[in-house]
Image (cartoon, rainbow, N blue to C red; front, top):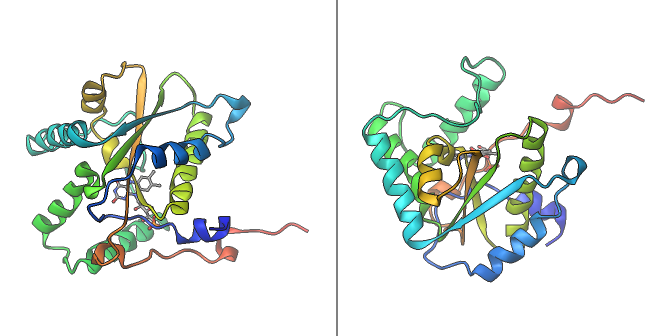
Amino acid sequence: MDVVSAIKSRQSIRAFVDKPVSNDIIRKILDAARYAPSGVNTQPWHVAVLRGEVLNTLGDKILDARAAAVADSPDYQYYPSEWFEPYKSRRQACGLALYSALHIEKKETDKRLVQWNKNYRFFGASVGLIIYMDRRVETGSWMDLGMFIQNILVAAREFDLGTCPQAALAEHPDIVRQVLKLDDHYAIACGIAIGYPDMTDPVNQYRTDRLDIDEFTKWYE
Ligand SMILES: Cc1cc2nc3c(=O)[nH]c(=O)nc-3n(C[C@H](O)[C@H](O)[C@H](O)COP(=O)(O)O)c2cc1C
């Protein structure tokens, strides 16, 4: 697959067929991802590859915490506390696209919760990755991490795999550190679900909008 096709065909996949992804393929994806650029080549990324029991245990513990109303305590703030335009509308459109595909209305909060909680099972993917990084590095390294993550998502396309980056897995970092036996100086950035997509599932049958180039670009000539 050519690079542009791989980039453009990537979409967040939230339902997977029951077919395992081999560690050999995961290694090939990570082998490509590690060529991401990073400031002064710090390569600050760390990856935990989860499957089977540990993946289930992590999901159980996070879901238990959420059922007990344990507050989120992410290692970094992803979103603004107060949404403002134009991001507020884009966020709403994103949620609307997902729940419309599933025929779930706004008032159906129980159904929304069921869908959201699938995050903590990596949407049924056979492999879940946790991306983490030494919390003592500075803001710039989060750019490096983003490039590494995108490399994973794009490289997965070469193997007909679908992915979903998941900030949801970073909402309870203490649980992630405890289950994975990670030292406290690691910040949990996100999860990534990886598996063979189930394209018959409506959750995978819509695409999110994009701005036109000229809506985000100024040309100086
Ligand atoms: C860092 C990051 C974290 C995300 N976290 C979640 C998540 O926790 N759950 C989820 O369903 N989607 C998550 N997404 C997916 C976004 O909703 C998705 O990328 C966006 O709507 C654009 O759609 P697309 O990925 O299909 O192009 C995340 C995306 C990124 C980049």
